[in-house]
Length: 158
Image (cartoon, rainbow, N blue to C red; front, side, top):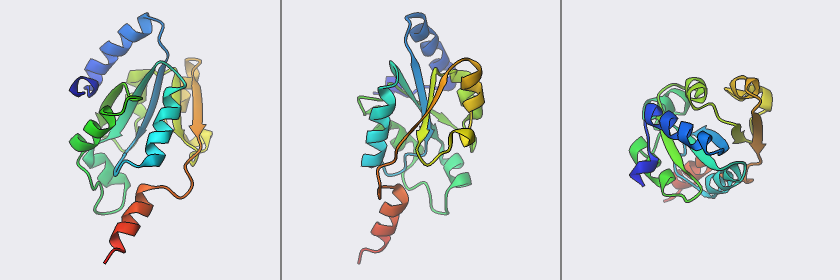
């Protein structure tokens, strides 16, 4: 499992070798704080779009910049390990910026995937992927399932 969690530099070398074998690289990103069934279904669907699924994981600092106070609930090393344990995930790489544009430019995926709550024209990095002839895909969300709803539910417990 730890061999699935890579630095950007190590990942790009691994992906070069996979591309040389003709593999199609799929990339998605997110915080994946409190992994839930919506996440696992999403990642399984993303994997079906290619041969190698790379998950860009927001670092703790990145999550603090884009999410409400108190997040992330789970530290990045734990979130990375849980993602790497999923059979559908081939590689996990952490990024510090609020948006994954630089990581997408480094990875150069054939397919960029986001949840259905993202309009295609607002997906960060889409122009990088499309300029190479790649595909940008959205996957429908599982209704009523989110980390935010889980946090609300936990806070309401006695």
